[in-house]
Length: 141
Image 1 (cartoon, rainbow, N blue to C red):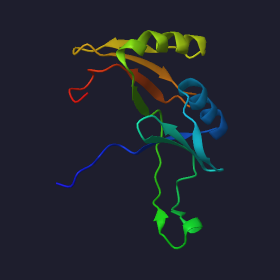
Image 2: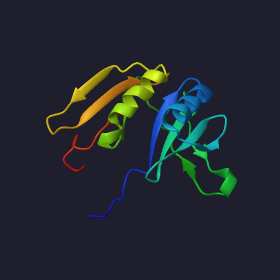
Image 3: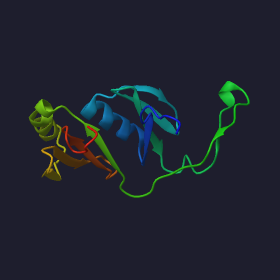
C-alpha cells in the first residue's frame, strides 16, 4: 500500500470570503498566504492548509494557466453545514473556552468523550460546525 503522510488541505465553502478569512484569522490566528476573488488559503499549524472557497467558484474546472499548461483543478463543492475539528493540547481547553466567550462565539456543545477527551463545538459565520478537541478523542491520537 502506498503511504500517506497527513491531510494537507481541507476546504470549506463560504458566502463572504473576506468575512470568513477575518473570522479564521482572528479566532485561530491562521495567517493567509494566498487570496484571490475565488478563494483564500490559510496556514494551519502542522503544515496544513485551510482553503476557503466562495460558493459557486469551484463548480467549473479551474485551469492552472499561471504555471503553463499544467492541467486543471477538477470541480468540487460542499453544500450545507460542514464539520471541521482542530486538535488542541489538554491544557489549552479552558483558554479556548474563555477565548470563544471573549470573541462572542457561542459554544454550542461541550462533550466529554469516553476516552477522556473534551470537545467544544461552535459555528463559523457560514454555519459550519467547528470543534476544538483535546487528545484522546480517537485512538490514534
